[in-house]
Length: 214
Length: 214
DNA sequence: CTCCAAATAGGTCGCCCGGCTCATACAGCC
DNA sequence: GGCTGTATGAGCCGGGCGACCTATTTGGAG
Image (cartoon, rainbow over all chains, first blue to last red; front, side, top):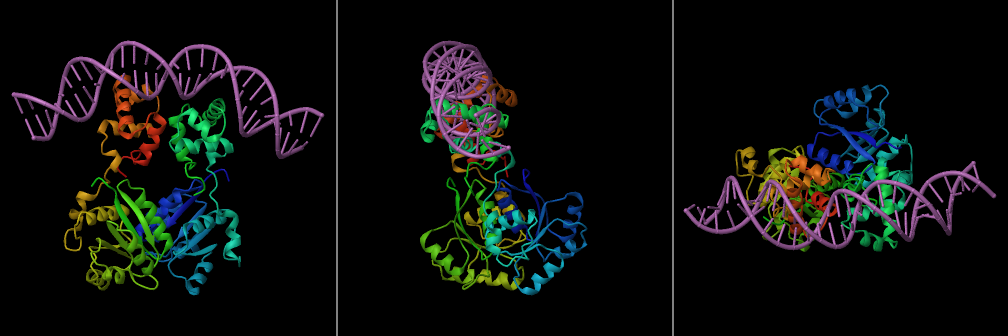
């Protein structure tokens, strides 16, 4: 789990696609590696990249997402995301080998949780209580680079990313001495391979530490 | 045009809504001030906030977006965003007073351009050549705070946000002397009301200067 | 043509930041 | 009980950074 979850999204509505891409990419532990707007495009994309999870819409011009799924050998877990909530569609998704079936009316955090669950091998269609099955996956994980940081170091980075840059202000915010602030910073610099506060801000934001638990 | 364009989005598919919200909010010159998932919610939202532009889906539980639009007195320009491209829907949108009609297959930059055009009073439904009508609105504008900065100052901030923090490296990147780098920085500090490079990085990213023309 | 803003460059000074080393207390873990 | 990692705190030192001031050139606006 030290690597971000690599996701491919397929949806013929570009607006939805772009939106989802941006929303998921904003999460530190999920990375959208490719997108497709048609079934054929999805098929060719999957020849090149091996994602950890696939998000696919059913309706797409040319070839349905389900058809592509069916033809995959050794497929990654796939979540079907569609507007249609009818059981008929659900059954077709199951038949094609999907591990989850989500409405486009699903809140984003729920989708993110489903992606994490799917990446963990959970077959969401099998469980009867979806809520509790997703519970362990609700919160965003730390991005890989942030794992080596201690809690206190992450706090410090969050403050830095919030525009608090002076040693004395940081010390006051964290109720510690200036010396300790500088010690934490030195430790951060070493772990992240950087050398000053400006770079620390860049990393803090890149690692998603600026918005505690989005 | 010094303020960001305030937008309200209504769509019953939460996933699409969240995605759009995040995608549009990422643009420096557009700000999503509220969202709604039902027609009634949209109506009540519009009683509280006066957005510059409304993005609305047609199908929504309870009350259609178009119905809400029709009942507004002195309505802000509204763009209808829908999955349906049939002329019938288009005509209904026109009748409700929409200024634009976009498919959910529209690329995100196109939507952003349409929002900017609508904010400028352009009625997109009247023009026959949509492409050229949107052309002036294609590129993201600078966010308000960034307007006071000169081109060179913005370049410097972009480099800073890219992790280049040392005076000598910045000087080399920009083909100028270290002294000039420090002069530009001093000027940036004054304009943005900050006092060091770490804060400059925070502002650069907040203002969207880290990704030249997204 | 005039004037101003922007970009360029230089100087000085004081302070803060970052690098290096060390120390103590506490918690968890085997 | 002993090891390890984390959090806390301290001192020292050199260099870089930010504040303040001045100056030249260039290009565009009026």
